[in-house]
Structure formats: structure tokens, C-alpha cells
Image 1 (cartoon, rainbow, N blue to C red):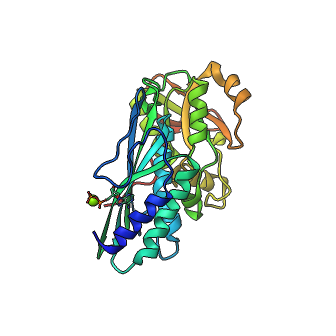
Image 2: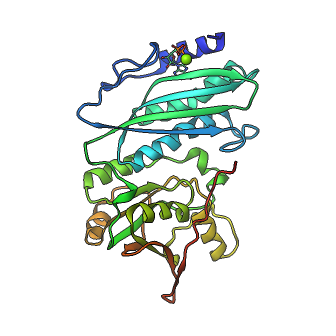
Image 3: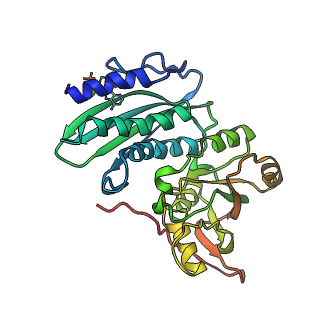
Length: 304
Ligand code: ADP
Ligand code: MG
């Protein structure tokens, strides 16, 4: 164990608050989680300098924050509560101990906000670029998880927030939809759920395929974020559905639950009905004249 690693781990131990589900966290060979009677939900996402952020312009604090936030977005999409995070970092040699501390500070600030315990990880240095992998363990009542496959013909399709242009900054600073997901969990009528990470068009295809339904989206209903790119409305809609990294929730509900949802939604985050699920397969746009055309699954695809 290097000096940097030793100092970092010692410092982390002084920073981490506990919670009852985590009787043993950083400091032993493994962490212990007591989730009974819940089901554990495990998510993991790896972020690379130069791909998911660029340290030439992005402070290490925000790179760390994003690494946890994208995982919390997946926990939210499962309808779960986040409990513990595990952080593995490959630190470029020479980046220094301040860099490692700032990355972890970004992670821990967000973790504290959502009562997530940093319960372990691994620290390495190497000659390559900065890499950070976060795994989060969440919990959900048995049988109550939100699945992509739970959409039903006749459902309304909804999305939270507004979409597009997150690369201009929101991909680093977004609030994961944990509170909204927890509220939807208690509300109790949610069918399919996914978080919008690759772009609405791409992610909706996952819902349609896994649920075995046809999805129809009203072109004019897409909530376009002011940051979306383009000078015409059409260009801005393309940006909204294909840029990705919005980390909003895309979900379906039975049509007769609409009033109950809108009548009690307590958040300032917008909620928009964008279309519906139907018998069949694939994803389609409905244009203002009522005609339909296939929706391409365009969106952010990681290149190798
Ligand atoms: P081992 O050699 O047994 O794998 P380590 O020395 O790697 O143990 O880690 C010691 C403790 O510090 C473990 O509890 C581990 O989970 C934790 N840890 C190491 N690196 C990190 C990190 N970057 N963030 C959080 N916890 C870490
Ligand atoms: Mg280790």
C-alpha cells in the first residue's frame, strides 16, 4: 500500500458516516451489509478520463461526483434506496494526493446528501489516465423493484425533467432522481422504468423490447431543455432525444392513474406525458398531423 493510499483511506475513515445497514465499512478486507428483509440491488458504472469527462477542464471534485451520481441514477431507475458505495480508482502517477482527495470529496459530498455510506474500494496508481469505477448497493422491498420489462399495452409514457445538451454542464452536476423514484415507489402504480442515460430514443427501445410492446411518442410533447443544441425546433428535438446523459426517469403508468400522479406529484422537477405503449413492437414518432414514422434508436453509443 502506497503512502497516498494509506493517507487517503485513513482520511476517508474519518469522513464516512454510518448507517444501520452497514455494520462494517472501510478498514477490513470486506464490508458487511445487513439488508434483510430487503432485496439487494447492485449497480456499477466505470468512468474514464477523456470519455465521460475531461480533466483538462473538469475539476476532480466533479469527476468524482459524476461517478457516484450516474450509479445513483441507476439505483433510482430500479426504484431502490441507495445504501453503500464502493469506489475503485486508478490514479495517474504524479497526479498527487490532493487529486485523489478531491475526487473522493466529490463522491462523499453527494453520498452524504443521499445517506449513502462509502463502504470500501480500491486505490491504484498507474501510468495511464484517471479511471474511476463506482458500485452502489441499494435495497428495495421484495418484488417491488422497477423493471424495464414491466411496461404494458395501454400505459402512458412519461419523462421527468427536460432533455438535451447535458454535455454543456448538467452531466456533471445533475441531481439523480432518487427522491422522485422513492416517491413513485410509495405512490405504487409505476410499471416500466429506465433512466435516460444513452438518450431517450435509445433508452425507449430498451423498454419497448424488454416489455414486448410498441411505444409511440408525440414529437411535440418532448420536453426540450434550454441547453439542447440546434437553431430550429427540429434540431433541438433531435438533441433532446439523442444526446444522452440526461439521467432523468422514463417510465410508464396505467392510463387511469394519470390524474392521481399529476394531482400529487410534489416535485419542482417537471413531469411530462410523452406518449403511450401499445400492442406490437418498436418505437415510433407521432407527428402533429397524426402520421407515424419509426424512431431510430440513435443516441450515445460508446465507441471502441
Ligand atoms: P486489501 O489490501 O485487503 O484489498 P486495501 O488496502 O486495498 O485492502 O483497502 C483497505 C480498506 O480501504 C478496505 O476496506 C477497502 O475497501 C478500502 N478502500 C481502499 N481504497 C478505497 C477507496 N478508493 N475508496 C474507499 N475505500 C477504499
Ligand atoms: Mg485492495
